[in-house]
Length: 398
Image (spheres, one colour):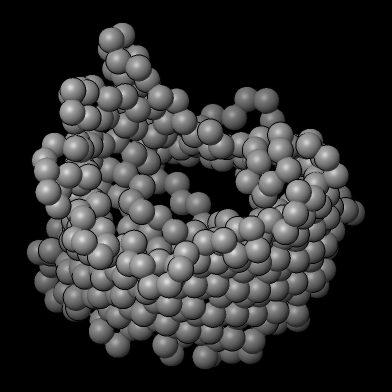
């Protein structure tokens, strides 16, 4: 799920100008964006479909905003032995794609602004990277539904990639500020690159957080979460990832990036995330995903989806995405949502990750009566149980 937090355009301009003003430094330019236009059959703007209570939705032909990230980075110092000091920044924007002129207002955000230093020492620290600032931190996601299941991004500092012989150790300290008298202090410890089988690696993570607060009657408890993830390369020409997660207290809602500091230790979640990205031949690629999440005394979320892609030639793709989500709340009836999208695309290469991708799509979605009035709220399909949308979209990263 893409999250925008308030930011200022002048800050973006100033930071970018500062980078470019250092003419002696080579500047890297990187980013991501998706943009398009769409409508709903029967009239009205494009409606997007997400099951109430689900943390994500299957995204092909099902994104109703323009979103972009623009980043700049430069090595401000490079030593003869490979030592370096680096500065990087990234800004994000989101618009409703309503018309030619759209003011960004609060939909402009600073996502990253940090300094990094590496290759400074020998021994176990020979490949270590030290950082301070605000950054995307070792994020893991399911691409076809944009679900960042392991994400501890934000302001903080730490050290990555310490060689401990059988793996790579990383530690990060990060904070979420909720107001002037409450911040949530989080510690992230990870051990990655543990070889467990040919082509397979294990990664283990522990998150621990506590509220630093000055409030009368505050009742939140400390929280912790553990993640175990196995990566297998060379599977059907691609890879397989299986992650198992469990969290308590502030992490009990399932989010590591946005914990709830008021949560007590009876709040828990358990989650399994499976994904397979395949490249069966020059002409066939795709991804399959599955999620099971149980939030104690709240709900259970089941999700499965697939996006197979047929590459007609070097530049033309045909694809279909099918996604199914079921949410079963403790205090109500379970509901289902099914979404199917057919798309034709132009992209430079016969593989799943080739971008830019310029797409034309048609989407059909249907949902159970339990979700009537909760999908497409304030749109012509609010009281329906199915809908068709169509449109154009491009997705690019570099």
